[in-house]
Length: 156
Image (tube, rainbow, N blue to C red; front, side):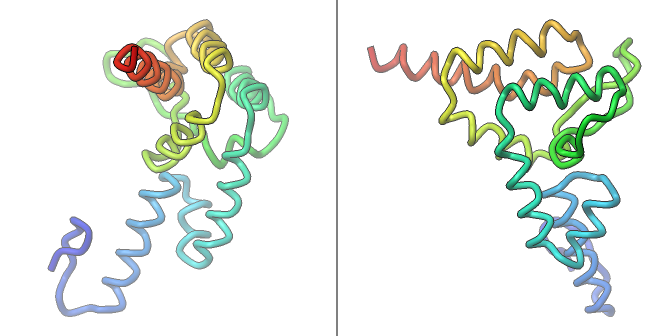
């Protein structure tokens, strides 16, 4: 039996339910055990915590990324949206900062629709200046800026 692309044994409905809950929690909140565990038992509360984290403005996002890059600990907001990944095989950086999940990346991109171009350009520049460890974060801002550029060029 397959549920949301996850192959599950037919004989065990409680295990199927738990597997579905785990898959859904991971898709929404990433692979951080604390978030996944909390979401399995109280999805709505974890979603509300993440919704609060999405309200982070660009200056706060810069502070979060700086905190992670410099390995200091200023606040907990970054735990809800950004995580540290080991480097890709062909990457020479010691680590990469990425959005915790595709769902979070999409939510950040949705919020950028209401952000001024100047602020988006500032964030792209900020992430690019930090180097290759933040290229995944910059990608969301670059994609939104590109989308706007193409949309406005097509309407002229």
